[in-house]
Image (cartoon, chains in turn purple, brown):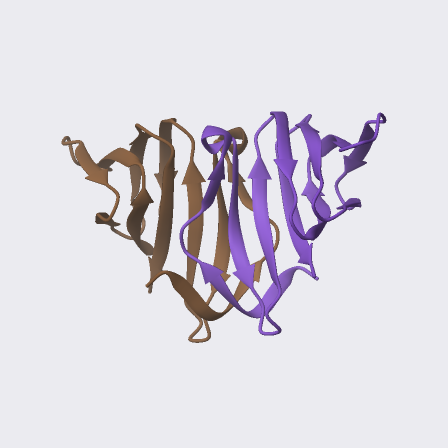
Length: 104
Length: 104
């Protein structure tokens, strides 16, 4: 799927780490939402409330989920899950375009 | 207006200047489209095909439109027009969140 149809988009960006990570919130008719974001090269830490599915649209990241010791490499076209009420460290090895789906 | 309703969003980001400027394309039911973008601090040059209305959502830029000598400062809440088939230099003085409307 290359476009999201019949959605609403919040105009103002979500900005993290002084703009090194930014995203737009996309709201779907069924009440769910996703964010489409960009990570500049760098190392970041995020926490989660809902579970999340992170899809790498372009770029490359290494990810370590809270409580795990292993870093996992993900490239364009690959995705990973983060449990609810958890978090992850993410190292953007290249400029990375991602889609985050929040899971109820 | 803080959200765009009943639109389609292209999943993949538009990436310029090695990711220092990125945007998402928003398509409207009437066939028009806008981009919602982020500029990292820096100096950039863009050319236009259609005329454009650039709205600064947050941040601060200086702009010089092709053929003009004067730089103009724009802040959050302000906007400026660029003619079709022209271009502009833009200096993002701060991380800048913008909305670009393409005008037929």
